[in-house]
Image 1 (tube, helix red, strand yellow):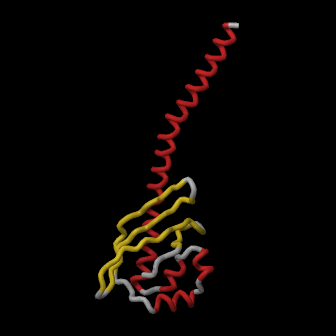
Image 2 (tube, one colour; image 1 turned 90 degrees about the horizontal axis):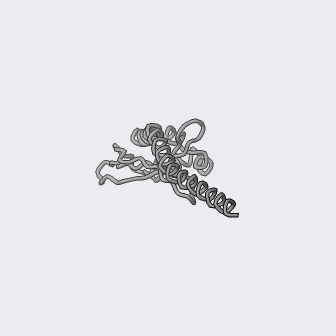
Image 3 (cartoon, one colour; image 1 turned 90 degrees about the vertical axis):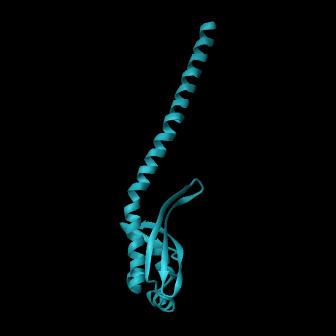
Length: 146
């Protein structure tokens, strides 16, 4: 009888040790993996942000429209995009100040570009827009009016 109780206690201790080891080792390993994965996404995020902002600076509304994600293109025709962009003062320059990957347990991962945009005769302002991987590349989603 004592042997059965001893074996039961021993099995519980082993199971507890295994669970503790998985938690202690798994958490840092998954954090390290996500951090490296996020760093690997940054060049593509930067390139997409620069391409979109560069198109805005050049006044190339068609190129900017082509960089929109599918949901935004469905909600806006190219003609509507051109009409909206035509009444806004074109920016003269930009500087990307931050690239962020925001993870949440209750929402999809967000990829965010923050940039300082300059305008002729106006103060510069900070803009943020989201990116999404689509069609083999990064696309701009829900861009603010520049």
